[in-house]
Length: 283
Image 1 (cartoon, rainbow, N blue to C red):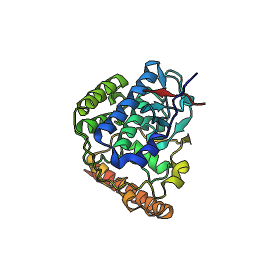
Image 2 (image 1 turned 45 degrees about the horizontal axis):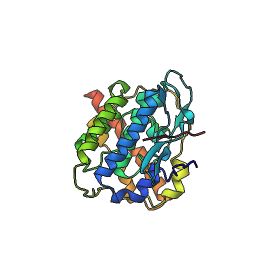
Image 3 (image 1 turned 30 degrees about the vertical axis):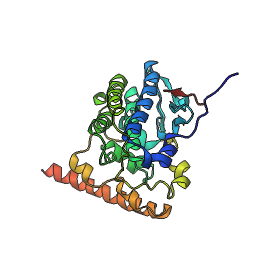
Image 4 (image 1 turned 45 degrees about the vertical axis):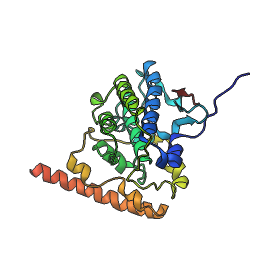
């Protein structure tokens, strides 16, 4: 008799349901398992091209984590003209029109690591549109959650660098996350209380399919990706409005007003500076 492991829920829903109860030991273990699964893909000279928390699956019976939706995978040396994916997880060089590489997957992993730490998808309150794409190109990233272990934070920052050549490769990333995971296995199970309010219940389910699924994107004439300065990164926090989310309509109003103010402030800073079918991979 063939016994198949039953897949449960994706990472996004898992975090929505369990985040407040997760210890850092568990969070780092999850990140380690996801990175291990990606290492299997990359060692076969294959790029996933569409990593996000909706296609990371958890099997409750075996407590395994799997990467699914490999339909857009292909040989690493095979270029693709279309920009397909979930915008907050797409690497800036891909948004600007460059070829997808294994380093692009590493950027997506950084966003997954941030999501595991915060309990919410990156840029949750913002439309997946030109303005968000431009801010990603200009180096804006989600704010690191207070209390995140320094070594885990450093991995995130290295992996979402605007320059693909400065990101860790999968072997380096796997080695470092393994070391962190091993060190945390010897620590007591003390729950980590995040400072970000968990607001995924309010309006999250209704917007799940609208905002958090992959699609074809068409962007043109973007500048070269760069890292934001500390001053630019501190202009506004992309995640702070989630604590004030009351309804879908209110969130939309906040988002539209915020994005307009954000762009204007960046322009002011710039002016000032110048004058001065799916398969699964498990682990």
